[in-house]
Image 1 (cartoon, rainbow, N blue to C red):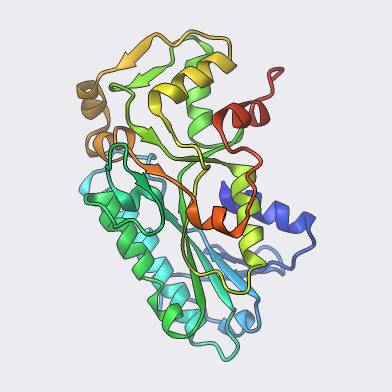
Image 2: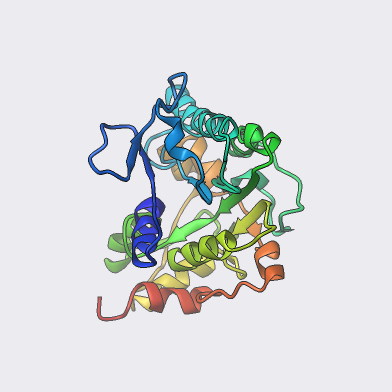
Length: 292
């Protein structure tokens, strides 16, 4: 989702983009790679002289129940691919100045109503451990002098594929409701703001380290439920009990659906970045015009 939108935005801005693909290349601006191979990129010379690299790989957290096999896929798809790319970039004669890599606010774990910025310590749990290992996998690039930026994404809101698209049919039928008691904080960001923040950081000569890619106004699940239902002019009387969520989703229920992460984008705010959708009141009309 993010990669497709980012490439489209870059094309509109006339950026020259080289896309790494695992299939056979179908266009001149594509380069094949396989993170499981050594080397991961056979023609690594094609990466010489790039201004920046952006890495977004990772299996979908919500695509399957977290069986032991799928947890291994979630882990390897992030850590192995990051290490492979960072190693390839570190070995270049003329490496990019910066590597922007996806991470997630899941690194903070379940923290209640604690306000979390980029200086907050990591939390505990599978997701928190995964995110720490994910970010650590970029160490070869750090050691090579490449500025590495860890983009800690919150829930990404867009009218296209993603979490919101899965919720809309339920809410439009008037069956939407909070998850558990609804008091858990949700850190979110509109896709347009996410893309704008990436372009903003690409222009920075000094940016490095973690950045919370979240709107400056995180909300509880209950507040989000009321806002979305109100925007769609539908009721939202229901609630999904915690035991039902745990029965349906297993470990993912506690780690993702019920975990409370109240993240604040302190570093983006400090640089002067302006969000077009700083609150859910701004975001929903921009993402879902009422005539849709």
